[in-house]
Length: 486
Image (cartoon, rainbow, N blue to C red; front, side, top):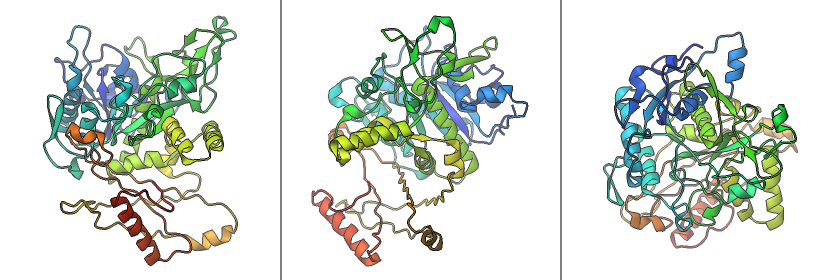
């Protein structure tokens, strides 16, 4: 393995620390990049952080790298901040989870001026179903940190220390959270298992789990056992945001990555840590070179790796742009698309598809799609900024008009062939720090941007007038009319 240069982007883990002396990790994690907010050592005595670091460094291709005869050139590095206490250390006050996250984020930023993504495969179960999807102190802190704002907590309230700073924006990858048990009807079980805190953060890229792993072990002890999920389906580990209902909270997870499968005996017994149904990764000690990783933690580490690779390939891209590329490169598997179409046929409305979005997110991104625009797709990346509100009346002063360089001759030659256009809009909201604003649709998130397409028979003037009419109707409290891509 050839480690990346010290100046290359890093995946910074906020977890149980990392066992830096592990032979698969040590060359990619400098001693000065191992931090802690607790005690004096950032070394991992638990094993979770080391396993996730291995996944973030090698993805799901560690087996292939180890048995291959070629040198593997790594393109990103690792950082770590231990945020979870050991057995002999005092637990954090739940009110201070956001404080701990803010402190953890600052340590690597002070130590090394490199690009990074933050990988947080830790979460906590929501307190009550009545507040599902509603911002918490922890998720609001993540939103503020992502937007480049500083925050300080006073009891149950957050106070913004600064306005959002685009130069200080951060990209967080957060695990959606795992189901607390397993059930034969694993899809329904996941639908009833809400996304954990702070994975409902508006600005974070929340990662759920799916699985392509369906090969049961061959040992006699598991004869007649079978995997719960079919190939390409949601992993039995993954939570969803279906219980958020129609409330105006974000649809999570955003994307899915491999999280492993679960074996069952046809009755009440389940096993979730078998090597054939999990992702291979670095072990905790050198006498345990390899270990298994699974669930939404492993999925999040893989997604964070993709984010760091995007930064290595395209160093001028903003964190919002990196997030957009991962979502834009995601696709639903055939099994997911079948479920989505079936739900739509039953209910014949967009709500049905929105429900499936709360289960599957936008699908599964691949390295090829994200980094190289596969399937002969042409991708245009536009990075732009403007002030959405002006003055104290909160009116939208203008919008951005982008004229795509359509390949008209190529499109004409296709005649009757179907052409798919995908548009991904990515931006960070500025959260309202006061809890008073969290119960209103337009108060917690500072603004809600969206895009529209000019119709084939619509002039530019007509298009602009239509968009203006829709904006005025919404400002007056009316529902949008006509086609709307949100």
